[in-house]
Amino acid sequence: MTNLRFFHLHSYISSAFSTHREGSFSGNRELVTLTPRRNQCWRFSPLKSSNGSPLAGASWKDDGKERPVVKGPDMGSQLAESTVSITVVGASGDLAKKKIFPALFALFYEDYLPKHFTVFGYARSKLTDEELRDTIGQTLTCRVNKRENCGDKMEQFLKRCFYHSGQYGSEVDFCKLDEKLKEKEEGKIPNRLFYLSIPPNIFVDVVRGASRSASSPNGWTRFIVEKPFGRDSESSSELTRCLKMYLAEDQIFRIDHYLGKELVENLSVLRFSNLVFEPLWSRNYIRNVQLIFSEDFGTEGRGGYFDHYGIIRDIMQNHLLQILALFAMETPVSLDAEDIRNEKVKVLRSMRVLKLDDVVVGQYKGHTKGGKSYPAYTDDPTVPKGSVTPTFAAAALFIDNARWDGVPFLMKAGKALYRRGAEIRVQFRHVPGNLYKGKFGTDLDKATNELVIRVQPDEAIYLKINNKIPGLGMRLDSSNLNLHYSERYSREIPDAYERLLLDAIEGERRLFIRSDELDAAWAIFSPLLRELEEKRVAPELYPYGSRGPVGAHYLAAKYNVRWGDLTTDSS
Image 1 (cartoon, rainbow, N blue to C red):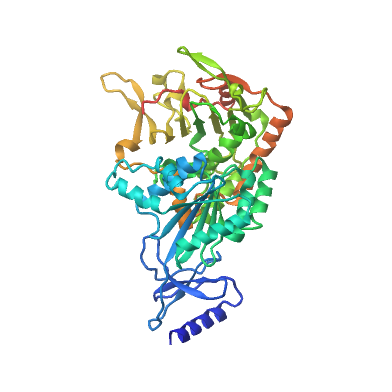
Image 2: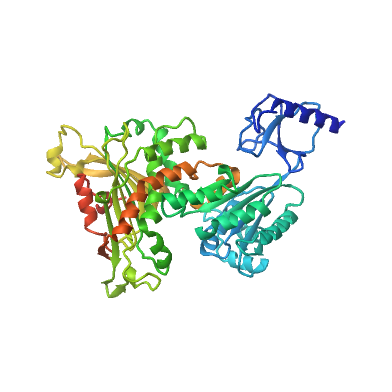
């Protein structure tokens, strides 16, 4: 009888959607999910919402994976469990050991991973399962605010970690990996996530082998791709074209870990859920926006890799530009990933192509301070002699739309500077006809309101306001209304990789970069990068541990702006 019911259900679906690969329908009955298998059989699994409750209705989406269908009150079905297999390709590298495996353990520790999951490391190195576990076990830590059962949790997690050695371009080796994955999946519906923690020149080889030989037969298969996504518009487009020979766009998760940082995630919440900010978020009230990234160390052995890309490709074209797009976008129709990414693309397409006149590049030189010597960039033995690759860049960008016309968006990023940090600074316009301007002297910038979002370290949001100093006289002061995360929230802030890995497992694409978004981003920077390299523009030298090249101050002054990070904040 069950088979007969299944036949009728299959016939109903086939007739209802004969002209569509996917369609949509919903009902008031309990929903189940049908997942197609290669042999045209079907298997049931429960469809649940993000909070784990059964859904009463759902859409039949064009994503090539799961199909919600109505289950009648008299229809029996055997619900099949699913499992997730996470394969870290390049498991012996620093990123995998320092970030990816610890992030996966943190998700397991907080009970965010599915009930059934397996972690595989894949690399060319010859390692056993135990050797992999010993290696990654040294990098795992438990939450500061939740130390209980830490040792037990680590042991449970490591038991689910395995290793397979293989060549990155070998389909035979990925076939062997597939066999091992099937052993661990034990007949459950297999979903597979591949994290490509490898150099970009072998992305396509790995995707070819894994997609052909180790894709899930009847679940989803996804690939997380690390930056850099090419060196310019042409190479980026070619990489995308090659990846799409083997994958659909919705299988590719281009990761920018800065989008997973807590304060960047909070940016849209701050703006769209607080009435006090949204009306001010335009050229009418904002004088300039600054996106600042600084590191207090140099390349330190990574010079060979860094020299191929430079600070503009490494930081500005991706991290800072992504934050700018989130900051400047119009209100999306919803929080759906495609609605948000559509608005980001509109911003990027509205931006002017960056000109050399609006850019300052620098490179750190050797410096002695306090009896300690600091090396120059070109002292790194992995850096070519005479390199003109910038380790610092400042740029003025503009968005030609109704909201932001004429507002300079200043970016600044550098290595070997005087401090480490990343922040967004929003400087508002001067108060017209300010009654108290005499109390601030001739420097009206001291009276300017400023919103600061400190992304790292020591996360905080604060607003600079003018305030009367207590006393009988009329003396004014600039004070901070401060949300200091470590004081307000006792919970430890998750690492960005935790959020992004969880989103990839759940199929949430909001914080990942779409191909047209990538094209629009490269279109802004590629002409500048080409000109810098063709003309071999000499970078301005600045001492290791300084505030950067003097030229950056002249660039800001050109647009009547003062860099906000050079003032002393009490927060």
